[in-house]
Length: 494
Image 1 (tube, rainbow, N blue to C red):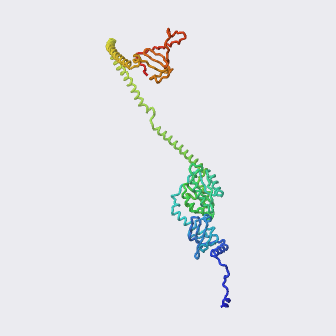
Image 2 (image 1 turned 90 degrees about the vertical axis):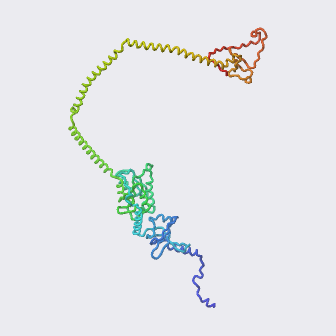
Image 3 (image 1 turned 120 degrees about the vertical axis):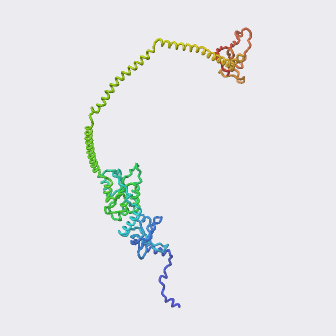
C-alpha cells in the first residue's frame, strides 16, 4: 500500500499557492493590458449606445466574433462623424478586462470609417434623410441681396481663404466684412461653424455689431475626411435655420458637401463666393453711365418730338386777331347800349327826385314841426305830476323805515337814562365781574361821553370851591364830547 503511494508521480502545481478570484482577475488584466497595449481593429459597428454621461458603448464585429468596446467621453466628443450601426470602422486603442463579468473589452481612443466607401455610404444615407425632411427644397432658398452693405464670413482667420475673399471684395466693391473665426477641420470644426452661423443670425439690426446682409461659409479644398465637418447634421440644420441668405464655398469645384445642398447659393471656390455676393463697382458705374446716356438721349428725343407736335398744332390753330374779333364786336355793341341805358336811367331817377322834392315845401314842414311840438308839450305836462307822485311815495316809505330804525336803536334806550359802558380799547363791558380796579372806562350817555376809572373812590369836597382849595386835590372835570348824528345813523348797541 505504501509502496504504491510512493510510486505515484506528484500532480503539476500541487505546491502552487492558492489565489482568490480577484487576484486571478488582476493577473489576467495586467497580462492583457501589457501584451495588447495598442491594437487597431477593423470591423462593422453593431450595438451603439451613447450614455447620459457622454461615454460611448458599442460592438465591433465580423463574421466570427464580437468585441465589446468603450470610448470615453473625451474621445467620443472628438469623433468627426456620428457612429451608426452597420458602418464599417477602424478603431484604435488598447485591450483590457472587466473582472465583474469575466470578459475582455477594448478601450478605443480613436475611430474612423473604414475607407472611402464607408464614408460615402454614410454621406448618402444622411443626404437622403435630410432631403426627405425638405431641407434641400428649392422653395426654401432665399435670394442673395444685390448690393449687401455687410458680409459675414465663417472661416479660419489665418488661412488663405479669408485673404482671397478680402482681396476680391476690395477689387469688386469694398464693403464692411465681419469674420467669425472658426475651425474648418477636426473634431471641433462642426460645432464652431454652427456657432458662427447661428451667432450671425442672433445679431440685432442696429446693434453695436452690424448684422450681415449675407453670410459666406468658406474652406479650401481637401479630402473627404477633411471636409467631413460640413457634412455634419448640426451644420446642415444651422444653415437651414439661417434667416440671413447664405453662400457655401467649401472645397474646390469638384468637392461637394451636404452644406452645398441646403445653402441658398453654392460657389465653386471662396473667391467665387465673393463674386456672387458683390457686383463689380466699375461695371456698375459704367452701366450707370450707359443708362444715363440712354436716358438723356431718350429725353432729348422726346422733347424734340414734343416741339414738332407743338409747332404742328399751333399752325392749325386760328390767329389771335381772328379769335378776338367776335368778342371785340360784342363789347363795342354792349358799350353803346350801356351808354344810352345809363342816360335814360338817370333821367328817370331825376324825375322821381323832382316829384318827391316838390312835396317838401317850407310851410308843410313848419306845420309838421308844430304838430310834433304840441305832442311833446302834452307829454311833458303829464310827466311832472307823475314824477311828483312817485317822489312822494318814495319819501313816505323812507320816513316809515327811519321810524322803525329809531325804535330799535340803542340810543333810544340811552335817552331813557341808561349808559353804555366800554373799556379804553373799545370793548363792551357786560358785567361788573369782568372789571378790575383801575380799568379805564368810557361811559356813553344820550347827550355825550365821560371817562371813568373802575373802583376809584372820590373824596367829598371840603368846602368852598373844591377845585381851588389850597393844597387840596384838583377836581377832575369829566370831558364831554358832543356827537352829532345824522338822521339815518342808528349806532351800534354792542
